Length: 400
Ligand code: ADP
Image (cartoon, rainbow, N blue to C red; front, side, top):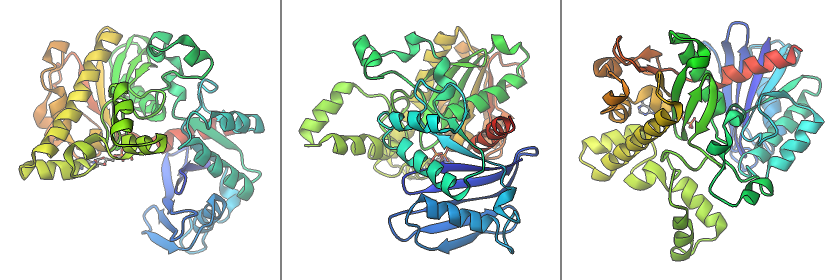
C-alpha cells in the first residue's frame, strides 16, 4: 500500500509517502509558512534530489494540493496520479481518554477531536486543518488518525493522577496523558525483540530525547508512566521547554515579569530548557561547541539535561522493579554520545555495564548496543521512525 503520512502544524505540514510493504520512503518534504506569506514547499523524491517551490499557500488545503502536485509531477513525481495513494495517515497529538489506539477517521472522530482542542489548543486545531484539507482534496481516500497519547492510555491511575482534587480529573480532564507514544511504542517493541525474555516479563525505560524530550516506563510492552503530563511541557528539561518545575514558580513569574496567561505559556514553552539555561542555543551541537570553548552556562545546560534523564531512569527503575533495557532515541538520543555517557555514568548499581568506547564510536543515527555483552541491563540506541509506524497502522486499518 502507498500511504501518505501527514504531520500538520498550525503553519507547517510535513509529509512522507511510504510504500508500507517494504517500508520504503518514496518521497518526503515540508510546507512552511502556510497562511502567513512567503510559503515554501520542499519536495524530496528518494534518490532524485531536492526541489523547492516558493508559492503562497493560503491554507492547508492549498498546501495539500501542492504536495499532491509534486508527488504526481510527470518529471519528478513518484506516482502517476493521486489515485495511487491508497490511504492517508495523520499524526494526531491528543486523543485524550477517547483513543487508546489508532482509528479510522470518521465524522464521529472529528467531533471528539474538536472537543479535545481545549486540551491541546496548540496542536489539535492544526491536526484538524490537515485532516479537513485532505478530505477536500482526496474525498474518497480512507484516512487514519494515529495519536501521540494513545500508547500511554495503559498507565495506571497512580501514575496518571495528580495530587489535585479528584474533581479536576472528573470535571476538567486534568490528568497525565503522556506524549511521544508513537515513538515510545516503536522503540520499546524493537528493544523487547532483542531481549532474551518473554515480552510480558520485560521492563524497559525509553528515552525519546529530541527538541522535545520524554521518557517512559514500559512493563510487558505497555506504558506505565511517561514524563510528560497534561501537556508536553513537563518532564526532563527540553530544547526550549522548561520540564518539571515547582508550579508556584508560574504564579511568581507571572507576577514578577508581568505576564498574562499567553505570555507565561510562551515563556515556559519557548524561552526555557537548555536554551534558557545556556543563553546560547536549544541545539545540543551548539551547546557542546560552546562548552568546549569554556562557556560555563552551556556546560551547565548539558549537565542539567543529563541529570534529569538519570533522575527519571532511577524513578522508573523503581516503578518497574528493575530494568532489562534502556533505550535512547530521537535527535539527541541517537546522535549525542556525550549526553548518553553523562546520563549513564554511575548506574552500575542498577546492573548497567556501559561500553563507553562503543557508545562514542557508534555511527550517528545507527542502531546498536552500547552496553557490554555481559551487562545485566542492556543499553540500546534505536533510531525512531514515527512516520513508518503511522504508515503501517494506517495500512492495517485502511485494509479492513
Ligand atoms: P523534534 O523533537 O523536533 O522531533 P529531533 O528528534 O529531530 O527533534 O531532535 C532535534 C535535536 O536533536 C536538535 O535540536 C539537536 O539538539 C539534536 N541533534 C541533532 N543532531 C545532533 C548531533 N549530531 N549531536 C547532538 N545533537 C544533535
